[in-house]
Structures are given as structure tokens and as C-alpha cells.
Amino acid sequence: MKEILKKSALELAQMLRAGEISSVELTQACLDNIDRLNPKLNAFLYVDHEGALAQAKAVDEDRATGKELPMFAGVPIAVKDNMCQRGIPTTCGSQMLAGWKPPYDSTVVVKLKEARLPILGHTNMDEFAMGSSTEHSAFGPTLNPWDTERIPGGSGGGSAAAVSAYLAPWALGSDTGGSIRQPGAVTGTVGAKPTYGAVSRYGLVAMASSLDQIGPVTRTVADAAALQDIIDGYDPHDSTSLPDSDIDLLDEAQKFSGKKDLAGLRIGLVDQMRGEGYSEGVLNVFNAMVDELRQRGAELVEISCPSFEFALGAYYLIMPAEASSNLARFDGVRYGNRVEPKEGPVTAETMMCATRGEKFGTEVKRRIILGTHALSAGYFDAYYGSAQKVRTLVQRDLEVAFSQCDVLISPTSPTVAFRFGEKSNDPMAMYVNDIATIPANLAGVPAMSIPAGLSEGLPVGVQVIAPAHEDARMYSFASIIEEIAVEEAAKCPVEALEEAL
Ligand code: GLN
Image (cartoon, rainbow, N blue to C red; front, side, top):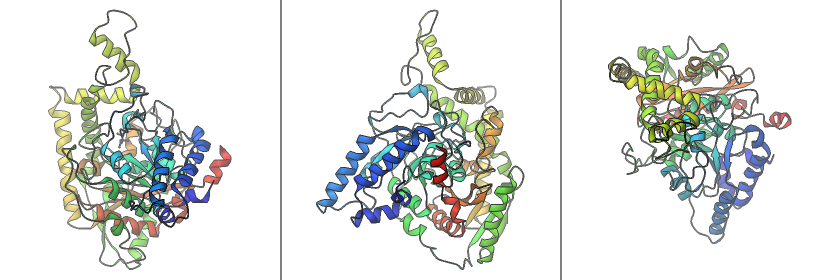
């Protein structure tokens, strides 16, 4: 594998500007690595060789003529398969959309193109972003590059594995309940979920609209901040879009660089996020991080967020409720690959039944049924109504917490990457993986995972949660975690992977 592939996006941008490498060379190196490793890893569902190279060539030509280019022009990127890109198959990991080519670009894709980042292709995911392992993808699971018998997390296992295994310097993911952060934790990558509304959802295939948020998947905190700088901003196409901010997140991510004395920084430890359910190995890494922060002078504040105990339950009512409504459009008429009924009369209803029965996978059907039930007239107050109340309590608990500290930290995932098949037949066991990531989605606050250490030779992530609109603060604290972290945690031992393949 070419050493260049291990560079961060920031380093690559500098090399491109200095003329040490061309975008075509860099993009070709990524594509070669994808061609070599992807048949086994299954991180990409679609690779756009031609498109990526054409974009790279155009950047090189413009640079040669002295044209002023955006900072990261020429650095290739991968995109999760639920973000529309005109003319490029966008399937959401589902047979329902197999072969569908969107007629338009999502806002994030428009922004990647404006930033002149060649798009390498679309990455694998659990069907319609429902899952924590990519085992629910209709196109087969993605393997974890650290140990190919283990899951890469989900739903965005494809983006995380691609970045971890050096198939792409960085990628986009989407996070409804943890699908950027949990894959980040178990693949040793950095994953950030911005404040709800900071990044436009226009053209992101909706799962649960009040929770969905697009964000960066990278190998360094600075790259994540830079990528959020590229994709964020007000978008009139998204009614929940926040006004533009003029804060440079990359600057903020570098603010504490080299700072050894952390006096004056208050870091909250949530009682409910580091006890029961978390494995010993994960807690050891987390506690070592806490000790080091304390030694460097940070004030560690004990915080209690009692509502977090109910957050998982509330999420698994609100999320399926919204998804059941959002996924109604996949009916073989408006969207989706139509299936004619095999027998009996062909009516709109029998056609829709055949389409949805055949093209949706088990987990998607489970959630549609769950959501429809939670919203049904007789149960609305008991389920959906109660869940919304819990959501308010989570927001309030976080407000109180942030009156006592600057950021919260926790383990991102309760365990390291588990083995394929271990949880795929037990929905509850799968859902519990999101226990630490869900509160941030319910409250709309920014949160990210940073590789912090190793347990059983596998990466463990620490999560930083900041108040809403304080993404800058999240990145600056994340860089502190990154500096303290065991360096190996962010370095996938790809040599072993190459031998294993
Ligand atoms: N694992 C969670 C779920 O299955 C989160 C998914 C996501 O963030 N897209 O719902």
C-alpha cells in the first residue's frame, strides 16, 4: 500500500498545494487500494472510477493554470449510500432502491463538489441506516479492517471501514442514533455528529427526520473539523437548517494543540454512562483517559442525568415512528423497485404489499411495524407521547449538566467490535450498542467519537458531547483527547489485514 494513503486530508491538501503530488495520482492510489481491498471488505457499494478521476483531473488542470482553489481541492472523499448524488446509484443498502440513480445532488454533495473533492463512491450501510453492525445491509456486511471476523459498527460501517483501512482519506456519514460515532469507536476513526441543523439534510434519504444529521468520518480531529467547515451552513432547502456560523472549526480544533496544562477546563462525567452495560476493557481505556485529564489539571465534575436511563427506550419509539412515516414513500409508485403480486388480482394495494414485502429487509419491517403501532390512535399517548416527554427530560438534564461543565465525556460504545452473528438475531442486544450515543440525538447537541485506546487489541472510542451550537468547543476538546490518546488506537494495522485477505 502506498504510504501517501496514510496521510490525513490536511497533510494531503498541503502536498497538493505544494505540487508534491497531483490529485489524479492521489485519487488513482485510493482507487487502486479500493480495487484491491474492497472485494473482501465490502466498504464501498459503488465505486465511481471515471467520475472521481475526471474531478481530480479538472482540479489538476485548474491548479496548473494558477486558478485559486478551495483549501482541500483534489483530496478525494467517500459518501455514505444514503446521500443523493446525481446519476450515481444511491441505494441506502436496500433492495428497494437497488439501481436507483437520483436526478439531483444532495446539498452536502453540492458542497463537496464546490470544495472540489473527487467523490470516490458510495459506502455500505445497514438498510435505511437501521442497525449497528452493517449486517442489515441487503448487499452483505462490511468487514472490520482491524479484525475481519468482526463488525465495523453501523449503520455507517462502510464509511468507517473505508477510512480506517485507508481506502479514502475521509468520508461522510449520517447519525440518527450513533451511526457515525459507534462505527468510529469500533474502527479507530474519528466520527462527529454536528448540532442538529448545522448540516443540511436536503437529499439525505430520511430515516427519522428530527434525529438525522450528516457528519464527518475521518482519521484526525482536525480533518473532521475541516470537513464540517466544508459541509455546514444554512440551506433554504432544509426547514431545520441553522443560520451560517462564521466560526472556523479547523482553527478551533487546533486551539489547544500542544497545551499540556488543562487548568480551568471543566469536564463532566455522567454517572449513567460508565457503569452497567459497559465492558471492563472499554471502561479501563476510558478511566485511563479521565486520570490523564485530571493529572493535566482539568476539573472532573460528577454529573447525573437520570433521564438517560430512558433515552434508549424513547429513541426506539420516536425513531421507528418517524421512519414508518418517512418510508411510506417506498411503495413501488412514488419510489422503490416495483414488484407485481405473484397471484391474485393486481391492484394498487396488492402491488404495494408485494413491493414492500419483498424489497424491505427484516429490520426495516420490524421498525415500520413498531413505529406504526406506536403512532396508532389507541397507543399514541402511551408510547409516542411518553417518548417525547423523555426527550424533553434528556434536553433538560443536559442543560443542567452544561451549567456545571464545559463538555461531557463518556465511552462511545459499550463494547469493542463484536463478532458477526453475535447480535444480529437479537434486536435488543443490537439496540443496546447505542446506549451512549442516543442522548445527543434526542437533544440535538453535537457529539463525536475519538479513538482513545485499545482493548483486546481493538480500538475504543471516547465520546465528547458539547452544548447545542458549540461544535467549536466539541472539536477543541476532542483535540485534547486525541493528543492524550494511545496513538495506535487510530492506526489500523492494515498490514495484517492485507495478509488476511
Ligand atoms: N444504531 C442505531 C439504529 O439502529 C442508529 C442508527 C443511525 O444512527 N442511523 O437506529
